[in-house]
Length: 142
Length: 138
Image 1 (cartoon, rainbow over the protein chains, first blue to last red):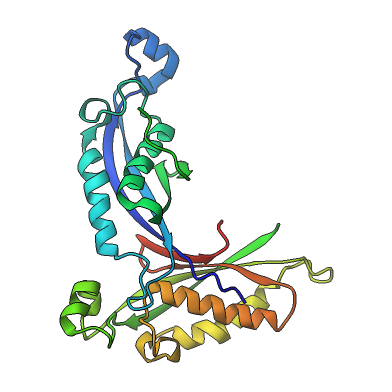
Image 2 (cartoon, rainbow over the protein chains, first blue to last red; image 1 turned 90 degrees about the horizontal axis):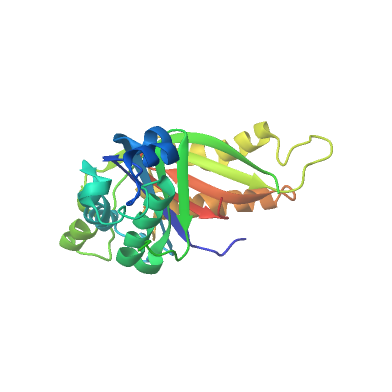
């Protein structure tokens, strides 16, 4: 029998942001040539699935209070990104385009800071057909 | 490795509170889930099995057999029941974490009796937003 009592808990949130792929030092035309239509302003309905892992507390039966997780996600993710412009309203996409890979890594870094070792990983779904998984120790890109 | 996942559903009621805590503590820890009248969910239960393919059936576990086993050991036991009355939760709060661990233990024991197939993972969807899993990582 398995005696591994670790449980992974996943909570999903949804938020919407506007963005464009653009690099400083490139002209509009150069950005368009490099990134195609993504260089123009557009938006996504993101769905973020955050997984925490641990052995349930014997007294409460919980890995982590879901209310607490909800508050962390509200503070670290929704308040920063929901109905915001990722390029203009956040500091992370001045030197790198807000691809789902970069965006997921940024979110993973923020949640690693907030949740520590409880964090197992994040899955950022940009739309129904595309998502990025980040696990491990990655820090937000500078 | 080959793994097969089958999804089941059941509906059950529960109250999250523990005799170890005062009413105020239960309220603080579990919030609206501690409401004494209870509440319920349509649970989604994903059972993943793994193991060698049986040369005769070509299956890890024939799906009909897995269905019968899950129905008998889990669904008949939990579906349209109050989880707090189940012996699994006599000394444990019926959180989704504990439900998932109990289901895995039950199915592991049942599968161990019949052959080489084993439970790789149990994933329990409590709401569209909250999912709990134990066992191997996917």
